[in-house]
Every structure is written in structure tokens, then in C-alpha cells.
Amino acid sequence: MVVEITSTIHVSNRCNLKRKCAYCGFAAGSSSAGYYRSFVKTEEEVERAAISIESAGIKRVSISAGYGNFPAVLKAVQTVKGKTGLEVLVNVGGDLNREELELLKSAGVETVCCNLETVNRELFERLKPDDSFEKRLKVCELVKEAGLKLSSGLLLGIGEGERDREEHIKLLKSLEVDEVPVMGFRPYPETPMEAVPPAPLTLQLRIIEEVRESLTSCRRITVPYPTVGREGVIPAVKFGANNVATVVPKNYPLTVKGVGSPEVGILEELLPLFDSFGIETNVERERLPL
Image (cartoon, rainbow, N blue to C red; front, side, top):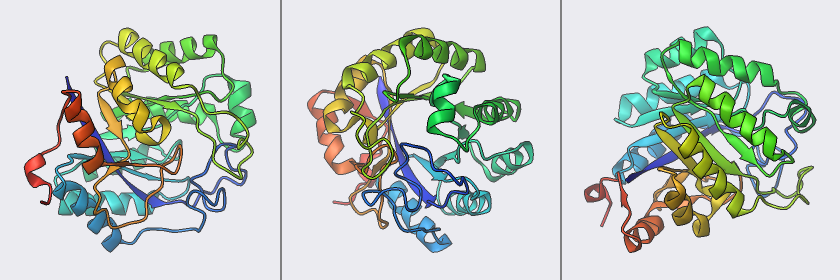
């Protein structure tokens, strides 16, 4: 198995949901450990980030933002596609409609991510009071209808039960997802869930394995570095993950924070780790700066 590396460009941390999700450390003002000050990246900043990613031999990037940032995200996609050959995933949650998906497709986007996070409706509404499970589910359906690849995953350790996880995997199978991020909760300080313990690595590994066994047609099982940490990357791969996300080169030109935790993966630190376990990646190493 060859492990894929997906990098990231966070276009904006502004979010037009009035009540922030209980665990969010990404949105402006949510946590001093995350992106606290409001920002929207300029075209020049997006270009520099994309070029640094491709120059390091990484082939894929996630372009993400909070609710209400579609014009900035579309512009970022156009910049990345115009300046690099990177494969692009877009993640703006449930903030997309049919027309916007067609615009993303026309701009060259390969994959759209809309994480449901949990199928437990009561839990979803309690932790995400201004979000909508039904809207997110509809976006997932529209992504498939548009002929785009669908990424949709689980957030573990937020209060869901075993049956919730089983039902979630069944729903993802019915959606014919192309990529499943398996994310373990990690608390951001100053958020309503700051005292909730992080999800055990063992839980993440077990669900990765269950997804691999249940969703046999799913191309990517993704483990985001901020939710698993350095100690969890190799076990995650051994249990079935074949894509490690939120990894940037050491010369990445922008300040970057993880979505699940502030920590991000540094490519030049991860490659020797993979080598030590005989794990091959899709990184074009000849492009790495000496």
C-alpha cells in the first residue's frame, strides 16, 4: 500500500453560524490556541502556499473555510488550479448548493468534503446548534449527483455511542462515499468542550479498521494528523488508513493550525518515520529542497 499525503490551505476562519460548534477551535474567536483572529487569505498568500506544497512533492491539497466563504474558496481553487497541478479537495461543511458545486467542478475540484460527524441527531443539535444535519446530508447527495467525489467522515469521542458509529458507517456506505476521514476528538481550550477527554487512539484505530472492512469500494480512508498526532500515524496506517491529511512542508509560508487540534504534520519529519517502518508514500521526493 502507498500512503497518500494531503496538505492544506485554510482560506478563512470566518463563520456565519451565530452559535459556534461546541468543539470548534477553528472559527474566529473560538480558542486562543487556534485561529483566534479573523482572516481571509489573499490570492497571493494562497498562491505561495500552493506552490510550497507542490514544490515539496505533495500532490493533493484540502482547501477549507467556515460557513459563508464560498466566493473566497472558489477564488482560491481557481488560483491553485491556475498555478499548480495539485489535486483539490474543498471542505466548507454544509454551506454548498447545486450551483456552487457545479462552479467548483468547472474550476477543477476533484473532491468535496462534507463531514456529518455524527448521525446521533440529538447530539448533533446539542453540539452544533446552528448547523443542520439534514442540510449536510443533502450536500453529500448533491456532491454525488454532480459527479464529484464525496468525502464524509466520523468525529469520534464527542458523546456518540457504539450504535451511532455502526449506523454512521452504514449511512456512508449507502452514500457510496469515495473518502472517509476518521477523526478523533481533541479538546481546544476555551471551548465548551475543553474539559472533555480526547478520544482514545484505540477507538480511532478500531473504527478505521471497521470502515476499511465495511466500505470496500471506498478509495481513501483519511486520518487527519491533528486528531491522531505523531504517535498515531503509523498505527493508523497499519489499521487501514491510506491518506494522512493536514501535512505541510517545513517551508510552508503561512501560519497554520489544525482543525482538530493546533498540531499539524510536518512533511520532512514524517517521511523518515514512514521510512523506518518501510511504508511508501506518494510524495515526489526529488522535488524536496535539499
